[in-house]
Image (cartoon, rainbow, N blue to C red; front, side):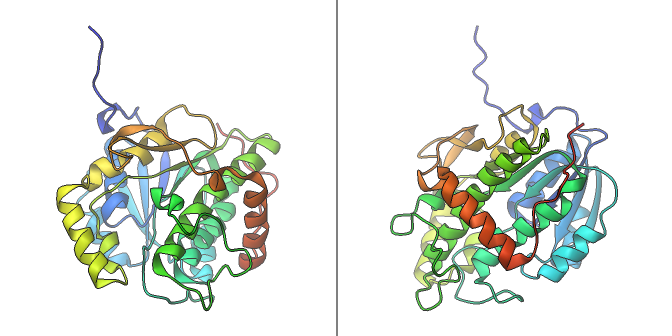
Length: 303
């Protein structure tokens, strides 16, 4: 009889001896990712903005974990985190993010969603890359296909004078996918066996939706969280699948059912804009200029 059981966290291979960093790890998808990796034997670093909350979250996890401060909205914090890293790093999970927040800026003057969700992770990844031996998984969203904002606004990346919370979020999540595409291209060209992959959780009930700039959307999200969404453990499965399965570089993983809003992890499609290598290179170049961080040479070759 065929085995129709869907992939879940119990299928994660033994992670003993491996080290992972998970950003935004104190709640939601992040803590679920930490729990699963640590439960499989990995040593997991919770990279969090609020160390106190991170320590409280880490205390609930069974396994080997530690907490380090990282504020992705502050490039000085990103540099400090990376400078403090020693030794190999098998897995980097770029999970942290903000969603549909009111217009604001990061410490370095970038639009908050683009600056946190993309530029912070762009800088972190490149600074840590000489230590990374296996893969980078970046969490995107089905919102990268949002109608009305299908491409990166290269003429106005900060959306100054034309800010809309959903548009800004969509742009940042599209940037995550273009970043993954160009990173994989550069890794392959450098002869590295390190892989860059992306994932999205579908609709997962986390605290992310509670900061929406719109009171109406907050109400609608609350209803959706109750009746449509997966819990954070199910929402983390695509990230975990991308982190441990033998998948090609630049793969994109999401839920396999109900319009990719819920279900078991599987390879999923992305928009044409998210598959455009010209835009990916253009975004990479702009990101280097904005952050002052470049692709390192040479990069580590995966063990």
